[in-house]
Image (cartoon, rainbow, N blue to C red):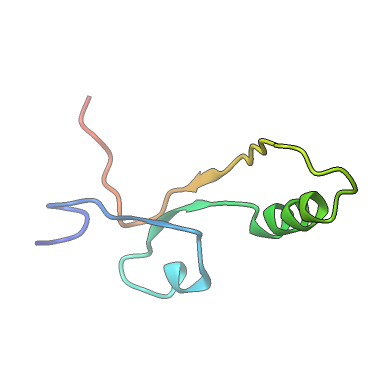
Length: 70
């Protein structure tokens, strides 16, 4: 199978390798440093409570995904 002619491929975490492969990999980029800092802040809280944390990711479109026909 050929990417993206036959199948589109998407990764997760937007690691550096995503741009070093052929075709360049479409990925979801997440603010992992911010997530880690928030996890530490919550873990060290004086009065830990149940918390929900929402992180906003971003799709980084590269060569491994094809444009869908309308």
